Amino acid sequence: MGAHSAAAALFAGLLGFATLVSCNTEGDILYAQRQAWKDVNDVLVSWDPTLVNPCTWLHITCNNDNSVVRVDLGSAGLSGSLIPELGGLTNLQYLRLHENSLTGTIPQSFGNLTNLIRLELQKNAFSGTIPASLGNIKTMEFMRVDRNSLTGTVPLEVLSLVLVGNLTELNVARNNLDGTVGSAGPRVTTIIQDRMKSSG
Image (cartoon, rainbow, N blue to C red; front, side, top):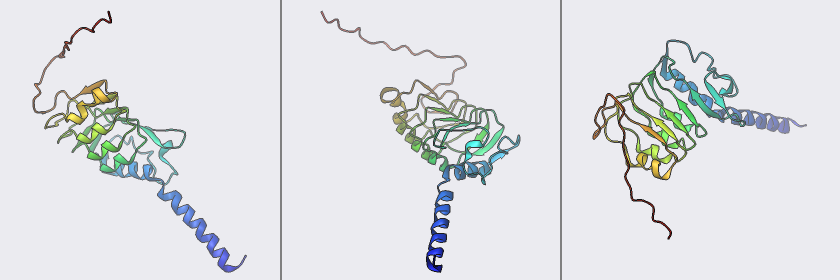
């Protein structure tokens, strides 16, 4: 092997290694989120950016392709804001961040989480509006953003998920949304429609 081919082989090997490292975007995204949060209980101490992927980190679940499908950090004592880069976790199915002290807005980029089934952001201190981009998530079955400080209205794009998507629970109670009335107890909505026509 000549010096030139040895150098080429070394370069190809380094290029392959660099590609492998740059593909580790999910770990990079989650580690960046860790840096943005205040973690008084050290629940994110296992989030080590030097590992090949985040699949061994606590509170993270991956699929068979080592892609992150769950982030389970409810009641973890976290504070700080959500970074827009979280929208890059495109295989994410469950994002459970309820009952923390998270602030700031819900990122527009969450509309890119098109495999999301459950979004649980309730009992935090989020402000701003509910992003209309969440209407892109046709897979979402369960969306809880209640007990925050959200303003504006519930976007029609999100409401439409009840009709064109799989959304079975949308809880926006106890925010500062326009056109809604705070209520101490549960409210029941009755839907009245015509009877089905008989085929006779």
